[in-house]
Length: 250
Length: 199
Image (tube, rainbow over all chains, first blue to last red; front, top):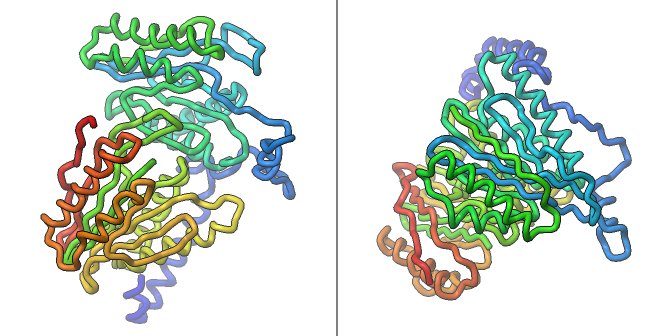
């Protein structure tokens, strides 16, 4: 402390120096702390992903169009959280599959939705699921929705500008009640009552905003979630397939 | 798209920020708080690129609190502003510069109130009033016209209301509500949210 130094309390500062030394051992990554201090992808020395991507996206280069080609939505209401997603996976104008599950079940009380690059979303959300499971094992209580979304946000920020494409909603029920957090590859992290992501999100917002009532019954909420996706898939060519609906309760 | 404004009086600083969190053309959130509490009497208002704002502001916030824990006393607003500017400058010519525009408002028990304007190129200026965003083009002239150094709190609130009315009248985007906070010797006070009806 500054005051201790001024008063010439040498033994105190030595003692605290010792304390910090021992603390350094304990403060290793993965020990009593969220373990994403180690970068999962060590970028080789000399490679510069940010510059490379910029050069690809200029005129004449091969343009990587990173659209979030999908529609997902989620909203809170009196009886919990509804999550609804479409199931079309596309590469440009080719539809890879109509039966892709865009929701990852992290635990019975935490869901992650995926929009953007399928590979990125699947990988990073599985990594998030691993971190949440480790948290549960170390701390003997389930991770909160806010903390889980912060973990994912920090992972995204570690690779800012390097071409990740993830637009995800972390939805769940924890001690604070229902929670929805929108996390994307820019590092945006927003908490809210209602979100929709993906190329068809604009259409889904229209239906959701006009049909939403706080005191809906469960059946009405399922119907609203379904309708949001249905209208989005009708208008947006990158969304389609079936509608998968999840309901998170206490 | 986003708007920040600060007005310094003889013994207070009044700050306001809009409440919209947007992603391209969609308003994702209508009640987003852009003010970060650095200490009991310092607020940092932060707008700019999506992930950078929260990341940078929380980094500064935690470092200011760490200083207090290590040394037993808080950073003054001027010191906090210079620390913030130094961090912006250090990252400016790196591979990941922070694209954020900031207003730092605080009350120092020794020096009185202070409002600091910082932008993404890490410039720093202590100013009696300041604004960020497209809305600044419309409202800085109102501040130039009506500001006087010995403003009362009521007068400062009136100028703020005038600025918000002007935005509602002439600004192309709909910024319908604003968080307002006042800092004085007793700390940070939440004022009534300024909401504007439809045009």
